[in-house]
Length: 397
Image (cartoon, rainbow, N blue to C red; front, side, top):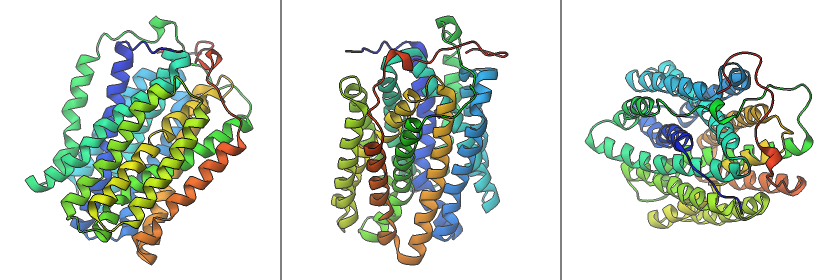
């Protein structure tokens, strides 16, 4: 059985990803409050999801080349810096153009963190890469689970914005604490270039699976608070805070998933996650009781938990030694999913109501299940470890 040996680099990478998790899972309930504050329609509010997607897409188009030229670790720090700038713009200004710009920058920088964290952890841990990536996302979900609660508390205290701005001093503290952490170059790990040729069919099947899963995650994260407000007797603050159930489920699922990924095939775990998500969604969608609906949301989180980390690890393993390229393409899929899914759901909600629009979720679950069925089982082996020739220029970190 593969064992993880978590060193200072591993824990720092977990913490860096956790910072983006705080923003990402705090943004959904904040968006509902921003919509109330500014009088946006759901369709206009959904444009913020599109801004997130556009930022992620722009990041994904350039991250592989930048990782080879400048190194993955410096790119993570650059991404966190851009995230801070985006947070200031998002919270300091109220015009729609400003809030969309802030959302774009937060996603643009955060996507550097997500993509490079995965390849760093795969590089460091080899066969344990899927488990390490899942653990890192468990940390992000665990941190993110507190964010909706913080947003709800901030509403009571006066402003939801303070719940997001707390990230600025936290990131500054990480920059100080992280100084002196051994580089990847010191460990003999080097970034690979982007070799010519196309990624295999096996890779693109994995891409479809993870993209559909990301769309489910974002649809639930951005619109579940609205659904709870419309269908149950929960107050505005309580509905926003209840999104914590989704993220808490993701934390639990990923914490357990890291252990399970060392013992069971990836595809088997993904099938189980889809089934659990389907059961949780049926409870969430069918109930008008606040506590019951929140319980369904918790079950959804348990299922959603494994889509991204295991789907990403699956795609990296299917990349034929091109991990940076593969991870960047998953980033493009994440951008499309996080933008198109929530925006379509918001537009449908304006036309038919949030309850009917939420049926996008089970449709996406079917797509993911078909993708796993059509693709071969992928086992993570030592050959999936990220290695290769040193880049022609720049840092190898």
